[in-house]
Length: 184
Image: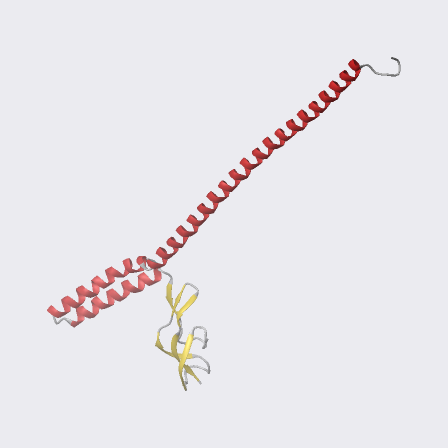
């Protein structure tokens, strides 16, 4: 029995081999279970990230829609402040016209119109509107629109001699160029 194995020893080796095989299978199964749980965790994270992305996208779409609506509303009512300031001027014109019909005092009408004009001018200045200084200034096509050239003994060539229609600026932008006559 020295060189040969007994049935008992062979059976023991067989059981050990099966146990080793079972242990390897168990280790593989645990590894698969760990991988499955890791995979499941990654799936949960991916789903959470996807949901977060969808909420962020919805929030951004809502922000963009609100911003567009606010911009449209601002544009729609941009002149509201100016109109609120103009209404008292319109009321004063209405009163002046009504009183001029009742009385024939043209001096009072002119005085009333002068007051209304000054009120309107003051409102425009408050909004940043200023008249363009033209007469006596060198002709500048950015601020002046020449409608005629005239000979002048008072002014040298290229100087504005007469303003036919006032020009206006809003802060640093020309709203309307002054219509002028320029000396030759």
